[in-house]
Length: 166
Image (cartoon, rainbow, N blue to C red; front, side, top):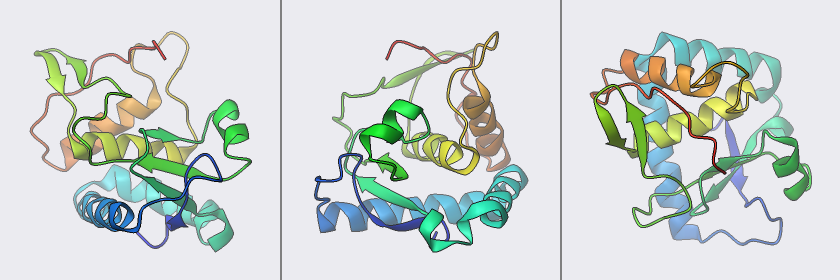
């Protein structure tokens, strides 16, 4: 975990992250990532590649926007908003209505859970990939997330489509 996150910070550089919220979110993210690293060969490869490529340099690590709406500064417009800072925004707030609560699967709509949401944003950070990909209903980040969760033995059905309505 310490190889990914360098500290607290929001997309807006003036945002102050609450210490308790940060600690709670950091602890949950740490647990999710430790499990992913030990249980998913795909996640391990992505993490090791990202470390070798850039995360070995502390200056290239990400800030954790704990308590903010789910987002990762991989799109150019988000990177500009953050003034060039690399930020992963995560939260544990079930009442956060800034993102869709359900995703489409072959078994119908499914509720997002913490693991799926956290892994999705971390895959953005590790790969710098965006959600959209021409002629692909899911996109690469959703595909990686599905594979990682399956390797972890996560019981949720795979996400079949990404709804681009932001």
